Image 1 (cartoon, rainbow, N blue to C red):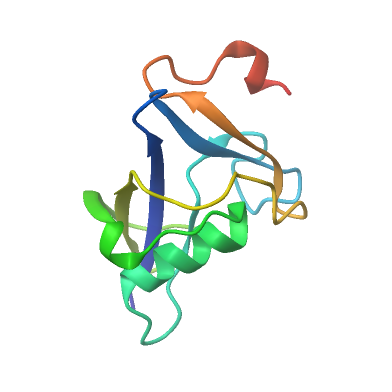
Image 2 (tube, one colour):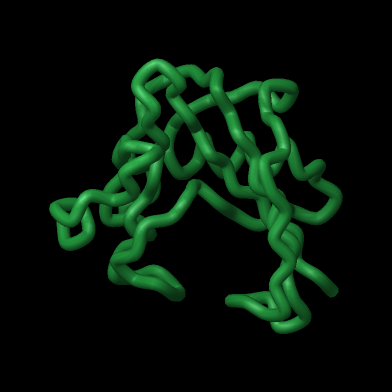
Length: 127
């Protein structure tokens, strides 16, 4: 069975920033690396609802399912907890409610706005 996953790019057009999470020391993989809010779909859950739920659980930000636009699809041959592969639907959201916060400190070291064009500043990579 292929695992269905949703990721969300929260993009502030006014400042050209996006929200990223830094994986914590207890992360199942890529400890210390930066990632989008992302998570697996529950059985029978529409992928847009997965995106809304995971974004809220990880960052506290709220988006409406209809505000999500498909930005990319990633099909992986294997992954953590997905020995038969995974399919990630990457959404973009330009409208949201709230300010990002680390709602899962047991999984993530921090949540930050970062410049969408400049990548992750060196000072954030090790913080």
